[in-house]
Length: 466
Image (cartoon, rainbow, N blue to C red; front, side, top):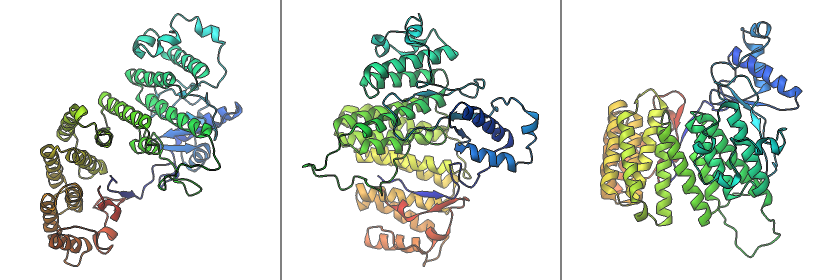
């Protein structure tokens, strides 16, 4: 299903509209980049949900009226607001490329440890009483394995074992990947969620890049190629497995998985989605949209595999998660995140409906509609588009009888605020008359309004739920 799409005028990268850093953060980045440059390392930074280069930090510092930090601070401590940094990945990493565990904002100004950096000889950590043997790494809980160590020593132990696994088994080996998942769980249990997310995402990137490097190349093949497979110079970039705000990107993971329809890939997709859900349950703060989307994609995968009956409990859990989020979420008409949660809720409701959980889906759709009416009000564009989206879900996967009331409701609301010649009014009227809704034109609301929220533009592609 293609998510209803919005385009924000603001950018989530360091090259977007807000391209200047606060003076203190800029000063820290400049000094850190200079220090690492002397050590032969390049550096990129992550701050405030954006990625920043040293050049951007220098421009911010020179522009700031608070450039006095450059004179007053000889040794700059990590600012209280977290900044993470890393060496940009090489274009063609080796199979044993580094897994980085970056220090969180509570760790003093120290370099991240990586598996490619110079480390003590193997004997120094193989004889360590806190280090478990390779044979036991994937047979015990990571908390049991590393429960007796902490701080920098724990990181060193983890990285030593990780490097040894890569050296002996290879990065793509199942045990190595299981070890990475164990480490992710461990970091999360230490309340180092950002480190866990970053390690998980980097692991997937290395694994995928390694597969691409070692994939055999044939001049000709008897097997017909998938015409939908993206390739060549026009290939779209794969969305990253981790978003700029440190959250796992479901879109990026699924894009990676969907490029191969093999059973192994389906199993991998299920494991990744379950891992995302577990992390959302452990640390639910600001992850409601991600949690709902992950559950929706998991249910979609079960439908694809024909295993709905084997996973009935997940459908029951998903309904419960939806109800809990709807009850506890801090709804605010001025926040775009409220609309994102509603869209994710509709996605989950649709997957429930497609699996024949019709009553549950109806209840979920009704809750979305009721909440939109409550916080946005009936004549708000966001409410009207939510009604249209629900109607489209029923039109595509149910009957017109299921969809009709939603389009009629949307039409009544639209007529209360727009004229008869408005593009959406005409589309809705034609849909009700002909018992099938389709988008007519760009005239009217979709092309010239912003939903009452600065920076959000409605796009026609939003109308195609499938």
